[in-house]
Length: 290
Image (cartoon, rainbow, N blue to C red; front, side):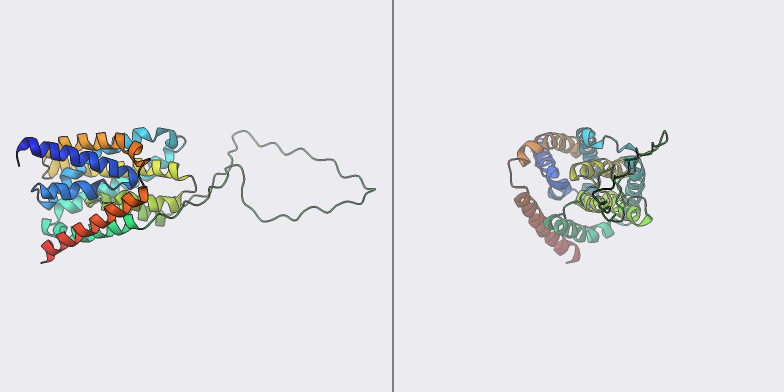
């Protein structure tokens, strides 16, 4: 394949992967096998894909600014966890023999594809910030007709600086953060369908709308990917000639994706990508274990 044809092919793959990523972070299921088809070894294809994906993370974070309003501290807390996890995943990939990744890749792709095919549960209903759940209070007794009801007392004034109680999220416990860390390690190591796994964990942690939870996912997963991408750029076998057209395609596809996905059956697209991912996992497994 000539360099010009390879460049155009990578640009087209990046556009398609960027569009598919708008469904539920499925870019790597498309771009990773394309890099393998162009002759890159598995580890080189993985690190090249991760470096190119750094640009989509920037675009996703910028596009999620309205939903991120008021969530700065939460993003910092969770982002620190995912950044460390992404670094650990990158270190595992760089320090372990490449043959281990070749054995692990079919299993990881199959697991990611199964997650794609399984629909996400709806997010829990958000609790109003101004209302604090408590025990049921019985209705007051009705006074006799002749009795005058007592005068209503004005509500006690809250002292200055008192904050209203927020919904009881589950992010502060060690178990949810451990789950976030484990997913971030996976994102740094390989990452296919990692965004879906992270979104599934966050939905069960945060009692808020899906749009706001997805915005948090965009930023914290981007941090895990960015730390891994920087490590790969310094120490990994990155094919830089493939990064530029692939990253440009990611940007174009990510920009055009929302417009197209609104006009396509999202569930059908997820099923198509998931089935293709399972087929790829079978093919890679036959090559690795055969």
